[in-house]
Image (tube, rainbow, N blue to C red; front, side, top):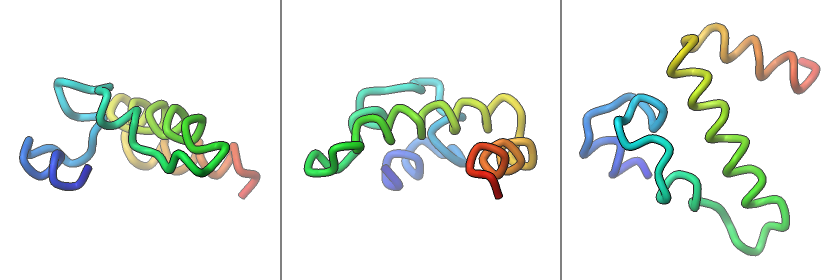
Length: 67
């Protein structure tokens, strides 16, 4: 995914005009039973980041994880 982001010249997937795409949503370890769920969660976090900024995203993730 780094190569794709780099090629498109964006900071992260959430800033890409193609987001969400099959590459990003489909990027997970199939041997991990929570892999696909994690990919969907990551998609949500990246979308939130693109809309609300890095600082609010950090606060959200900390809240969700009880940090």
